[in-house]
Image 1 (cartoon, rainbow, N blue to C red):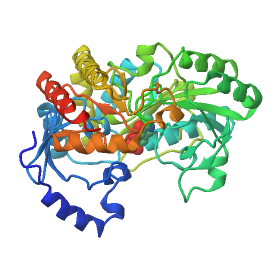
Image 2: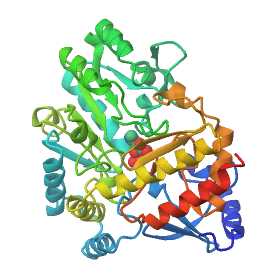
Image 3: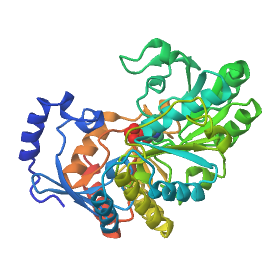
Image 4: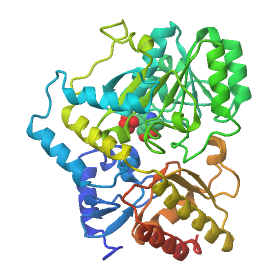
Amino acid sequence: MIKKNIRKKSEKYYKEALSLMPAGVNSPVRAFNAVGGNPVFIKWGKGSKIYDVDGNSYIDYVLSWGPLILGHAHKQVINSIVKAARAGTSFGAPTVAENEIARLIKSAIPGMQSLRLVNSGTEAAMSAIRLARSYTGKDKIIKFEGAYHGHSDGLLVKAGSGAAAFGVPTSSGVPRGSARDTIVLPFNDIEKVKAVIAAGHKNIAAVIIEPVCGNMGVAAPLNKFLQKVRTITRQYGILLIFDEVITGFRFCFGGAQNLLKIKPDITCLGKIIGGGMPIGAYGASKKIMDCAAPSGSMYQAGTLSGNPVAVACGLKTLRILKKTDYKKINLLCEELCTDMKKIAKAKKKKITVNRFCSMFTVFFTNKNVSDYSSAYRSDTEKYANYFSKMLSEGVYFAPSQFEANFLSFAHTKKDIEYTIEAFNRIITDI
Ligand SMILES: Cc1ncc(COP(=O)(O)O)c(C=O)c1O
């Protein structure tokens, strides 16, 4: 896949970018700080491949961090963008396409009886929290260690070393006051959830959760964790928010909630529903959503919300997905992960591969990974080495251990076979 394996132009542009943007990038993980080396500048993409400014090509398992489930530059999706743009790029007034995408999302995720379009997953999660507070009249929220729900102040909080830590901001610039109402608990630990809710339910508005974690690397819910969280939140009048920004339309035509048969009170979407354009959505029952202005007193707005070009792109993506059998990518991903595990075992490498349908993470530990602390047992130096070697083979994996990799419907058996061969070549030296 790599034609020249020379990245001279990328180096040149990166040097220039360093003088223009903090760390030369518009979003932190792109800087490759977690894996070393300098970022690759991408010129174009088609299907499962991306092509850099030096003419190298890579099989892409990042897919813009999840949205491009149909692959890069899908012809029908691009045509829909062009058609929408020709009719005007923004009106700040209602359009029919907004009804259409809302209707389609609602048909797939019935719990989103009423929904609002926003511009990103960050906005969706931030608005969902405000909505939950408005509806319940309570302030505190529970989130899980290692889960990412965008970069709004109250959600940029991680746990301390204690069992149930009250918020300490992960980022500078977040006032301690904003973090104080965020309680952080370990994922998959139902006893801690029960204890904290039993003691503090009078002040807890919501539990926000990635139903399948993607942001500590992939980690699935175990032992009916989500069902139990659903039961206890319902029992105490606490709203359950599923952040399906990654998982929405990733595993099936709907959310992880469809697959796992759990109905949250509020759902957040992003990524795939925009098909590669900036979008997000949050939705719930009509009763809850009617708290949002101007029906209710919870303020939330956006100059570009429901942007016609983003909506056209998302709508076309969803319409194609509705007719698509997800089995194909789930099976391809299974093949990839099974073979990587077999090779690693044969070569006596300590590796755990977590996969959920078409998303996966390779951890450099032989212990199970089911929460933040087990994910952080992974040897990140080994991951960095593996990442760089795979990149040199023309395979673009996530430039951080604690991220998910994705397959798209554009990935072929040949792509998978090539990736497995490359993995087989490089893993001996890691
Ligand atoms: C689960 C989850 N929620 C929210 C977000 C924030 O979305 P965005 O980057 O579109 O603001 C992300 C981003 O990766 C995410 O993975």
